[in-house]
Image (cartoon, rainbow, N blue to C red; front, side):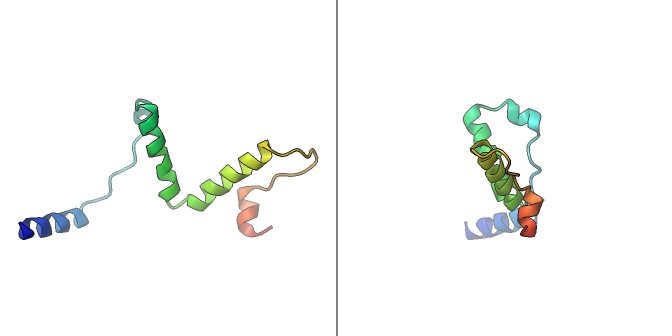
Length: 80
């Protein structure tokens, strides 16, 4: 059975990555499974941008001050 496992490992390494599911497909999923697939954004290359956007929107909704400008993700990433 070892040659079979080795063959499977080699064939899986050469296989192309599966494209992400479309938004229409995700909308047809049960809510719990949809949440799991939405978490894929946290493992993709835009992890930092996703987290900064979430933090920015959370902080602006909790902001009790009136004349305070909310930093944009670009300004946060640039260190401003």
